[in-house]
Amino acid sequence: MCGICGYVGLDDKELLKRMCDVQRHRGPDAEGLYQDGEVGLGNRRLSIIDLATGDQPLHNEDESVWVTFNGEIYNYVELRQQLTSKGHEFYTESDTEVLVHLYEEYGANMVNVLRGMFAFGLWDSENRLLMLARDRLGKKPLYYAKLDNRLFFASEAKGILQYEEYVPTVNLEGIDYFLSYGYIPSPLTAFQGINKLPPGSLLLYEDDEVITKSYWDLSFPTQPQRDDAQTVLAKLHEVLRDAVRLRLRSDVPLGAFLSGGIDSSTIVAIASRLAGSSLKTFSIGYDNDAYSELPFAKSVASQLGTDHYELILQPDAFKVLPTLVWHFDEPFADMSAIPTYFVSRLARSHVKVALTGDGGDEMFMGYPWMADPQRNLPTRLKIRLLSLKRKAQAAIKREPQTPPLTLGDRYVLRVSKIDESELEQIYTQRGKENRSIQHTSNYLLKQFEVVQKLAGDNLSQTDYVTIKSYLPEDILVKVDRASMAVSLEPRSPFLDHVVSEFAASIPPEMKMNHKRTKIILRQYAQSQRLIPDQILERQKQGFGIPLENWFADELKVILEKLLLGRESTIRTYIREAYIEALVKDRSNVVSAQRLFCLIMFELWNRMFIDREARSKPSLDIEQYL
Image 1 (cartoon, helix red, strand yellow):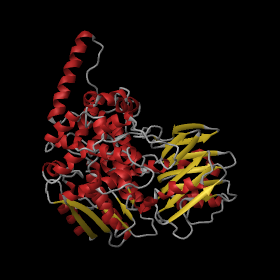
Image 2: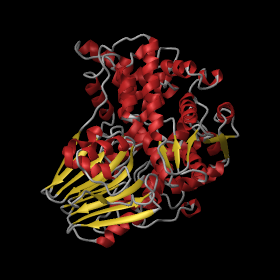
Image 3: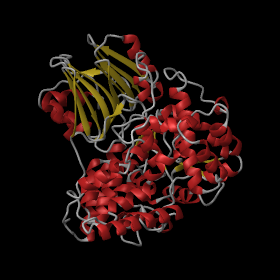
Image 4: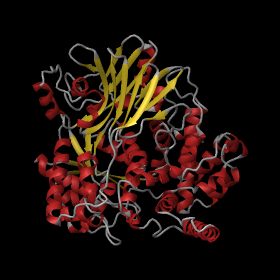
């Protein structure tokens, strides 16, 4: 795991070093710089595999191909054997070196044989070609920008911000999406002129031309093969056990996050059996029983015999927000980033790598509302849905061909934090003048159009869109930034692409019905006697925080000062009356979620736009009050 960066079009090793230095948290163990005329590659390394000789950037035999790499190639041992048999010579024992030799063999098609999580920049000096690539599901980040006829890339946007000719400005199109969903989807960012390479994509830069293309997608068969349950369970055991086995390859101490839910408990149980020794596990909880899963995590840890550590968060955990904003680079409003950061910090005090249960909900249909996006909607959304239905019905009477609300419409309504119809109402006049009118729902509706060719049933379509949107743009961003902030490498067996492709092939009724989620995964854990029955029968709880309670009491003053104080900046964009109404209603769950969005926008705007963004700003929340 590393922080990577580079450029094509200038010779500035001091800039390259600044790009590395600002990402030091991603790789505190070593730094490497490579310069070839007007091409630079940089790397900050977190040493996991081959501690002695694996420093980057690395090259092939004649030093014509160089790579800077972030992530893990889990099948590197097998790939290395194949490449050696073809005559390739290696000078390290690292997983990174297989990349340059694979490129010699397969060119850009090399990504198709990789099994892992990765983002890398590869320079072909003979053809003067830069290739950027990101793993299939988007576990590792990669930003890029074409500025002044030069191409820049980095693991984090702050790496590109080190280019002094670039002046950070707000991309209000990205902010529209942030207010709608709590994150900004690829390829957009919150910065004008800076992009994110989408998951499962390549970027080729040659002769001053940028070409991006997708190399992978997840397909749900329109007529899935309906094998008997025992056959499916046997195959699931094979692929999941293999995914965990590969992720146990490490030359440094390894542990696991343990929430007490089905996903993390299953991974920890499999890992414990494969490791053959006691695994260290880590959990976060609260004094509020409605949010805390600590008793369940402790129960699993006790049964599996892990070396278990836990931490209870208090309201003062909120003070970590400036730290999170700095590490996330963009406004990000998933409140579970707070406990994710603290459980990562707890784990990092004992290990350098942690297995996670991320992806279990997406691969095996773990969200109860997937069966019907309209089910158990909050009151505000029920009112909005009723209004939309009436408009649709009226339109049908006028135009018989006008369709009713689609599955995509209902999905957008379910996942939106602020409905797109409200966006125009919350901006100030200046905010309206600086944004182009966006229909943020199109981002998801277009994915429903794509998946209609890849999946025949509503459940699989809903799952596909979740895997293409919420998973890479929210869940995986959260885990990557929160863990790398403390130099911890997370590994997610459920996100192995072999596991995801097999899970997609399972008939939807074996994964979910209207009453039960993750059916086949529960059956698997039970058949293997992996975890206690009380865990198997638990409903999904999530990884939230009691924010509305904190806002109503301990955090009231912080909330008011940040958003309504003299130093507040987002009132340039967001109407003060709207902010005041939310603050007044802060103990309401929906209002608390929206307030969290505005707080993250406010802190980001001060840190990256209104203040000096090229060096680390103050991370003391008192400086922002």
